[in-house]
Amino acid sequence: MDSRRRRNMQRKLQQLRSVTNSSAVNKASIIVDATRYIEELKQKVDGLNSELGTAESSISHGELPMVTVETLERGFLINVFSERNCPGMLGAILDAFEELGLDVLDARVSCEDTFQLEAVGGESEEKESIDAQVVKQAVMQAIQNMD
Image (cartoon, rainbow, N blue to C red; front, side, top):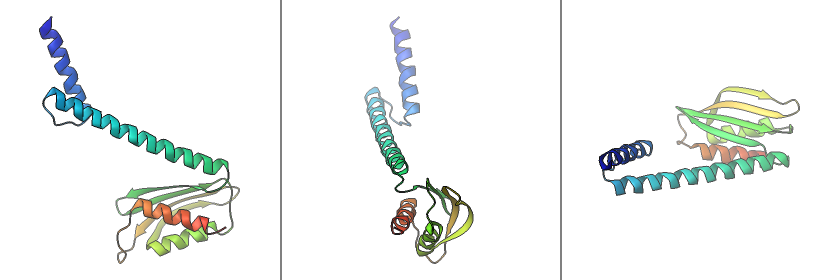
């Protein structure tokens, strides 16, 4: 009975080690790594919930559009959605791209009742490398400056 329980415990520790990408060998270290992994997941969930809450409140109040930026191999995928279409929004966003040194490689825009933009922006050769957060902030700032 003891050996079966020991084997079962060992199997479960190995599963835990695998799920948490731990390289630890002893029980205590595996559990410490698992605890850290759980804390990281909690922080990610809190961050995503906070981001989602901010986006939802902005849209429901009709204030700012939702802006998401994903990093691609060489450039960014930028999505902008607003419940209302504002004259000049596309121009303001394109000006922000230009200031960042992003070339628009592909774009789809709808400006009927709502405003939707999906664009792929590639970094120009002569500009310094920028990250997705910088692109998002620049787009949000351009939209805020329209008012």
